Length: 165
Image 1 (tube, rainbow, N blue to C red):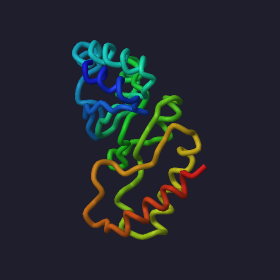
Image 2: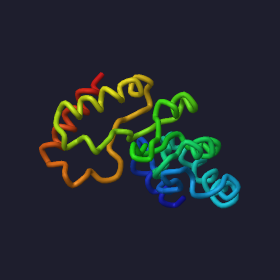
Image 3: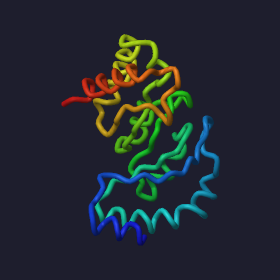
Image 4: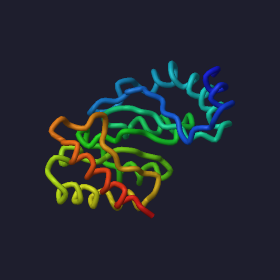
């Protein structure tokens, strides 16, 4: 809380992330009861202050977040990142279930070293989700080692192209 006070005196960030890693490829690693008992009281207190600052709150959690999202939304969390393609998370299903959820990720980083056509195809796959708003395509965690710097620059150029207004 003191850190938020300090931040609030000098600047107001657009968003803040809370790093939890509460999920893995098959869903949450804790039950709703455990979440409510041990995390919810702290989230409520923290998010009350963050909301007063008009800052968007996003939780950084791995794996399949589908079951976790309603728990997070119930305490005021607005988004999740990264949506891991390898965990088989479906961004469009999340959008249908939770229309206001903000999301980052879902880009299949395993195509980045395969060239421009493969990268464009992946962006095209994500276009319907991008059109819904509140979603930013991104790779999750680290970019694979087989992706060259030129590949990454190409990804950034395509990201700008596909997300430009």
